[in-house]
Structure formats: C-alpha cells, structure tokens
Amino acid sequence: MKKPGIIARTAAGALGGMLLLGAAGAAVADEVGDEDVQVNVDIAALPPVGALTMSVAADATSLAEVPSEDPELREFTGVLPTVTVTDDREEVPDGVFWYVTGQSSAFTAAGAPELGPEHVGWSPRLLTENNGEVAEGPDVGTVFDEAPNNVGLEGEEFLSLALDSGEARAIGEWKANADLFLKTPKDVQPGSYSATVTLTLWEDAQ
Image 1: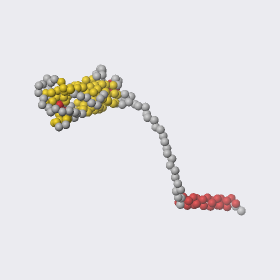
Image 2: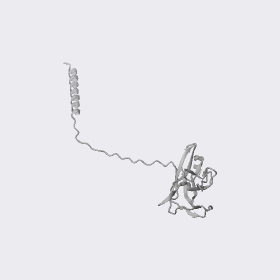
Image 3: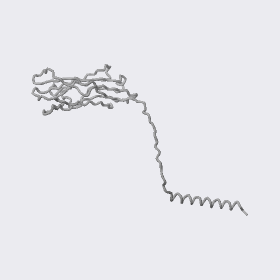
C-alpha cells in the first residue's frame, strides 16, 4: 500500500476545502463594528530665513496751514510717518532691486467738492546714512507748481529706491519719510478733509 500517495492526496483535498471555505466566508462577511484612531503629530516651525518687509511708524498724520507764497493759493504741510524697509534674508537673488512708492487718494470732506490727488505733493528724505546703496525719490509738485514733475501723488511715485537688493541688504534697515504739502485755491470750501496715501514695497528684476 502506497501510504505516501494517499496522505498527499488527502492533504491536498483538505487544503482545497479550506481555501473554498475561506473564499465563501469573505463573500458573506458583514461589518460588525469599527473604531477610529486619531493620529497626532507636532511639526515645529522651521528656523526663519528672513524676509524683505516694510513698516510705517504711524497710520495717520495731519497737515497744518502755512503762509502761502502765492496769494491765490492756500498751503498745508506735514510729514509722512517714517517708513522702514528691513531686509534680513540669508540670501538675496542676483539682479533684483526694491523700491517704495506712494500714491494718494482724493481729499474728501462732508458736503464739499473733493480735492484730487494732484493737489498734494511730497519731498522724500532718506534718513539712513549710506554710500549710495539706496536713493530717495524725487520731489513731486502739485498741479499748481512748475513742470515737469507737477503731477501730484495721483500715480505711484518713488519714496526710496535700492538699485541692488544685495548691496542694500548689507545695511539691513532703511528709513525714509517725506515732507507733504497740499495746495488748494484760495476759495476752497472749508471742511475736515481726509485722504489715504498708499505705500507699497516692490522688488523687481533688473
């Protein structure tokens, strides 16, 4: 009697039956229940690598009337709050430069005609000592001043300009402000006028 052959066939038959039972069991399985597992992880902030940023010392300033050299005009002057540009980046891309611009809205007062932004000008002043890494923007006159730069702050005008961001970064911090002046006709309607000067920091490629 060849017992090894019988044992082998019996084992194979038993294994086949187990496989069939397993397949049948999977086909009719019902979900009995489940549980959720919450997975938590604390991800620490990476060390700062610096940034090019701008801040303004105050969010408002006032203009006061001063004697006008033109008898047909009234003049009001004040100072733009100090604008600080900080660059603490570890690396600055080659061939880029930054600049700050300013643009004014119209001056409005309740019940009075508005005074357009062409009525206000400025004289930028760089407050940080340097060797030419950053320049202050040009004076911008009002519509009542002499040409050519008598456009007021209707468009974006330069407050300060870094010709090379990499060279300016060596200093790290730059401060500038501007003398503001508003000129109106002598018969301007009295009122409490206000406008908004929007300051913007840009970085561009040369």
